[in-house]
Length: 80
Image 1: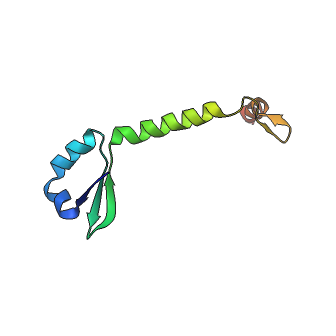
Image 2: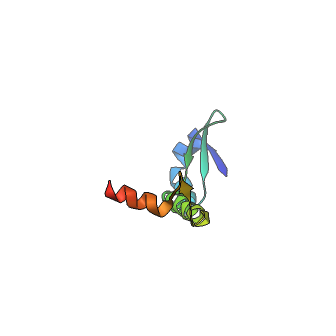
């Protein structure tokens, strides 16, 4: 992950945005301390959605909570 000082961020913002548009993440620092992060707007949401879907697919088919199956809980929620 690249870093840029606040002055560089101010003076070279178009160049930094080009890098971010290509998928790079850039940390903006002030006196060497990270204060902000430039990230691609398209990448973050899509990556999170894919990760959640992957985790959901790994869940067991029959989840039980207090004797109720997941399907029963879903149906009960629809009736409420």
